[in-house]
Amino acid sequence: MNDPLLNDLLSYKNSLTDQKFTAKVLEKIELHNKRRRIIIWCFGILGMLLSLVYLLTMAPASWQNLINPTHGVMFTGIGLFITWLWTVELYNQ
Amino acid sequence: VNQERVLSLVNRVVTQVDHMAFSRLVEIHQSLIRHFLRRLTAGNHAQADDLSQECFLLAYQKIHQYKSSGSFSAWLHTIAYRLFLKSIEKVQTICFDAELHAQQTSDGGNDADIYPEQLMAMLNPKERVVITFSCAAGMSHSEIHDVTQLPLGTIKSLIQRAKLKIMKSVNTEQTKLQVKS
Image (cartoon, rainbow over all chains, first blue to last red; front, side, top):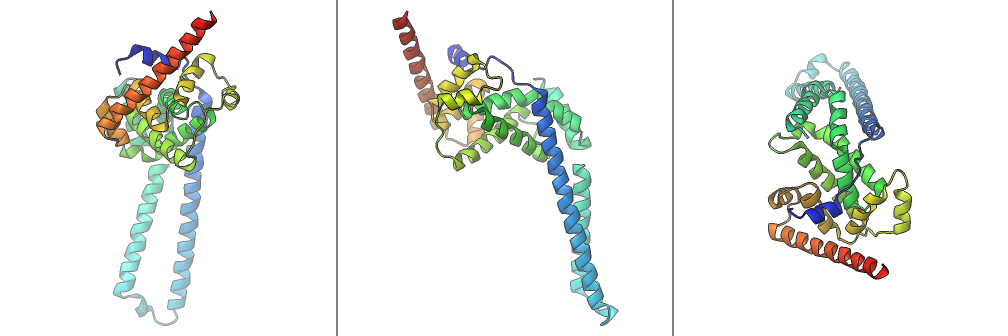
């Protein structure tokens, strides 16, 4: 806008650059990353536990039951998900 | 702000996840964004600073989505504007209370900087947004349209209306001063 008077009226005279603000933002980022890591670890551990329980309940019946197309798709999905989680986690470190 | 320097900092954050580079970006842009939000909130410094922090946090999370075709500052302004819109959805009315304002600005507030906020308080949120983008951020009408998605005609009339209100208030103030003297 080419209106010097308005520009002058609405302009702030002092800069607002201070280290405290920057430190607070970085602190929030750190907190956010920490929370994210906790969520990933909790879901990872929960997933492993559920997988173990599932395998243990299936094992006595017959190991051959484990090899079927449904399980193939499921394990591939889990593998891809873990790979994605790992990559995202590394990326955000 | 040197755009090349900013781009190299953004690049360092995206490729090396460099926190120091991001803190430098915060240092460079914090004054702009905090002033922008102080205008939009009509001088509510606490709310403006909270929104500014949220804005930088969101920028950090989404920095890989930033396209270098536009300026980084305009991208930050867009984030700040959307956060402001979200915040006013929760509280529909923003009123200017001089006493409350004095309390909120007591932490390092400056008398010279209260006047722009008082002027902003007379405008409605949409007028505040367009006049701030136009005046303080120096954006063109089409850039304001890109950020706010408001029609160009509406943007022009909002700027005109805001300008009239501000000039009217300034003239009234001046008349009062002349009468007193």
